Image 1 (tube, rainbow, N blue to C red):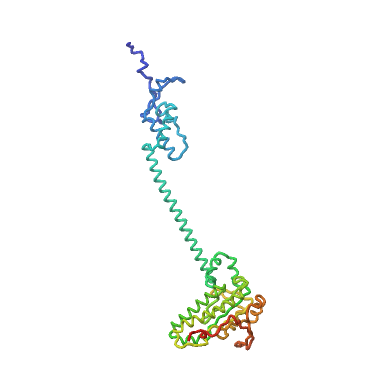
Image 2: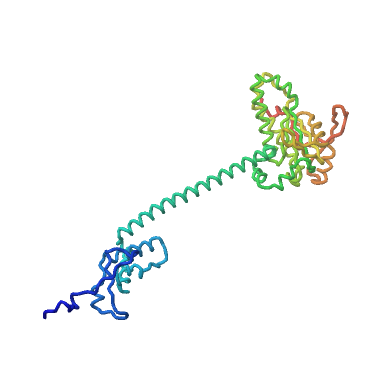
Length: 379
């Protein structure tokens, strides 16, 4: 059939195309066809089905949303208006395409997003690792600094106590407060004197030999005292001074004082015997004189650190003028020993002359004194 120029062929001719909006997507999209409201034929739906290129913007937008973890709120309607009418089936197809990445299929846009995400994730992981490392390093530095400051602040006490209690000193403020300046604990005081130390120095082969001998004596006696929970006050140059406060040394503080005396006697004799080659002449009556007293003392901070003062200190020092190998106990200490530990120690009275005071009666701790150092030396 031949049609006139005024007639239209419905299979070939299309209605006029509406101009696109200024904000709409360009020409790659299929122009929107006009149709009466509510009318849509299968042939029209077939003609406007978009190509793969048409679906790509939807696909890339959907993938980008999923890659960045955003809500699935893609405005498919707006996209559809820019490329033509797309059915719900087409949209479902686009979503299915987007999920193909689960099977290792990804578009160029998806690959770019993933690569950017991986780079950012790597930088983030490195930043987190560096931050954690810096925080740990800072914490370790702060810990070491706090420990250093604590040891510097408490150095006056740490050097006088057994190393096994250092941790308690650093962590227990209440315990440290008991050593505060002005505190007045009950305590046993022990004073150790190297008898005839001046003559002993003159008999040394060389000054360095005598220095080595005295260094060994000081370190050994100090270790014995600290091990028995004695607070080592000082090395006097020719002896030691220490005290056993009840709050630190415990109920056995009197026993500990006598035990330290005996151990120090034995240790000194052994050291002297081992250092005989360091002397040009060997003196027989060389040994320790040890004095012990008991009572209330007062703790005092000085330029040298922690020290102790009081009557028991004075008399312990005076009684350390005892003969070599002897341990003398003042009467106040004997009274406390008899009360706390009845019949546990052999204490015998001895006459003793104190300079500028005269003759007094003291008690010798028989089992905590020793004989001459050379008595057990092989011939």
